[in-house]
Length: 117
Length: 112
View 1 (cartoon, one colour):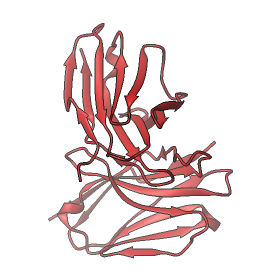
View 2 (cartoon, rainbow over the protein chains, first blue to last red; view 1 turned 90 degrees about the vertical axis):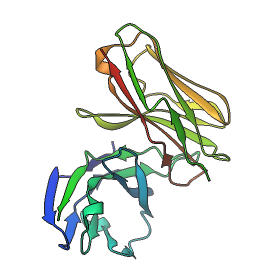
View 3 (cartoon, each protein chain N blue to C red; view 1 turned 45 degrees about the vertical axis):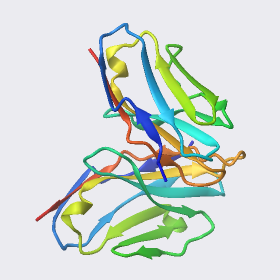
View 4 (spheres, rainbow over the protein chains, first blue to last red; view 1 turned 90 degrees about the horizontal axis):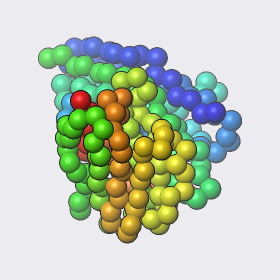
């Protein structure tokens, strides 16, 4: 069975600090996808990134970066120079490479990130 | 382009009443998903459709829950009869084949 663990329930930092959100996953599939979604206080779920299991290259998008390591089954998310607007609940998710192209997401429990001014 | 549209945004009703949640996927998307978010269980997939056909409903909690997709631009999730433990935020998401899902704003459901 697939499982995603986000051990950090809550993180609180001061603005401009760097912060890393941890994500560890379990799957027996050799082909799978990993995701990060953001849920701001307004409640919607915003897609941030998807990586497939064959691509271990780290990715950077502005202040956001992601570190994917198959050896440790981890897909960590770092926010550099955090801002108050980054305050949200962040979800890591896993899906198998669906036969029909549908990606059934298994979510972690989320990490509530608070950036204090 | 419009995103996934869900209605209503909030619903408060009494136990035993029928509840219908609505979703309009992104135009052209051929997959539609219904999720439920609760404090206890987090985000969990209830059911998903491909080209309006239900493919996997293994996450539907019990027979009181049903979902339909009569056409490519509309889906409903119905609870009948509703119970207090059904209180949650229900999300609809849509996607193209093999692409990430895009979520609606959710419906916050409270069953009194």
